[in-house]
Length: 356
Length: 181
Image (cartoon, rainbow over the protein chains, first blue to last red):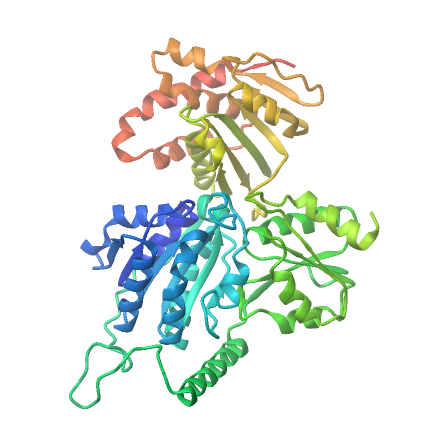
């Protein structure tokens, strides 16, 4: 079927894609810069078309626990927020990870810490990729870099969430949430009627009731569960790494950047090449699992890497681990809601590597 | 072809919607487009700006600091963005409320007195489409038929009765824009 072309904000694309992906429920609470998601869904009122529930909860904490409940029933459910609101959701998120339930959490990141600013930032990388809440767990983390990917990754997120029974986060930022670009929308999917054998609905007489919990007071049982999670994360690391490369064939230096920074860095690559600097870009699409193996391979070919992120330097730690000392790695990025310019990236690259 | 445009002025002047019409017009012409608004403290303090990129190729960074064309609609924006026009680029401004006119010698400067013209036409709301007309006269990157299609796309259906007056405003803009230096 032909895809429908629209001009949309990234936030609106998430909302429309959620309806079309056959999501059963969205539970949210407004916060800049992602409020268009709930606004769009409320206006679209999909309860009357697909039957999707859209609900503004009384708080972020209520919203994530509604997601927990919906996911326990085997439904396709999601929430969205921005940095301070995502911090509030962390308790629910770790419980969902601990109960091995599928769901989608969208974080349209703004500058922090604290209430910070409403402008774009990438300073929630640690929180998204290293757990965020307490306990040993990982989310699968997808980093969209365009409005098109804001739409496409909704469906992909649910595919991965159900495949691994694991919460998935789309880690976006204020720039991608607020900007408009062309987007090709997938046709409407029907809401799934599948009843999962792990869910708390649809119990036939032939099996025991299912209990969804993240509690196991027996340390041996809990450790076995931790080992099971590790095995799952290793499987995800094995199968689900996604990245995109720009002009790396002859690159002597490599930028590593995701989301908005990756868009900025594409322009930096172009500017550097106009000056005769052979620069390439690797854009991680999955932040967990991180494309460590590929970055390690590229470390054999380039003279150095620059991790560009709108933070004080978070992803750079994963780049350093991946490179494992083979070549120098530096961080560059603006903070506080300021988007790095393509020129600044080239200047930094020159000062670190070329003695400019 | 890539055209990198900044539109900056007061909130309520139709800065963001002018950008939206441009972006939609680009889509109608099968171009790549991006529309990146200010949504932060500036907007809450009364000034608004938007970066529109229209290109025949995939657009890299939607956020840039230097522009082929800057459309400047108040003094604060003039002070902030005159220096952001690329050498050889274009600055278009409305003289209304401007106390310090642009001074750069390495760019081409046009003036479109759209506030005055909109008031003559008894409709202050068409201010932004008059400016858009002026822009299209000096940068005819989109065919007029696609601009009209873009206008229709960006206006909610309940306002479609306003399309003829906006078409007229675009036309008027092309007539009144004049080169300053």
